[in-house]
Length: 91
Image (cartoon, rainbow, N blue to C red; front, side):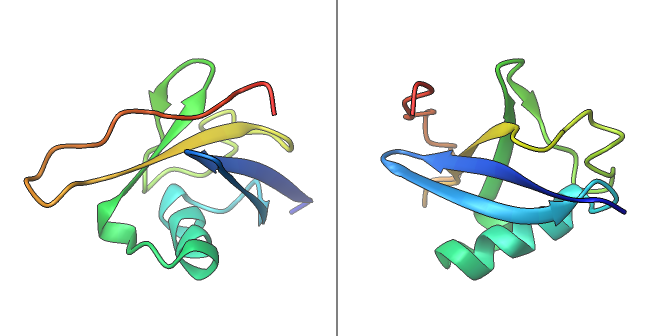
C-alpha cells in the first residue's frame, strides 16, 4: 500500500493527513480525530470537487481518493444538522 496524503479542510484550517489507499473512510476519520480532536461520530468528510460523501466502510482507492485530494470536513451540530461547507479551495 503506497503512502499518500490528503488535505482535509474545515473553515480556515487544513490538516495534511498521511494515509494509504487501502485505508477506509472510518480509518481516515480516526486520523482526523487524532489531529483535530473532533469525535469521529460527528465528522462528515466530503470529496471535492465532486461533493461526494466519503463512505466509512469503503477504501479510499474504491472511492477514487488519491494523494493530494481535498476533502471538506463538516461537523454535526448539537441539533443534529450538519454545518455548511466553509472552506477556501484556492489554498
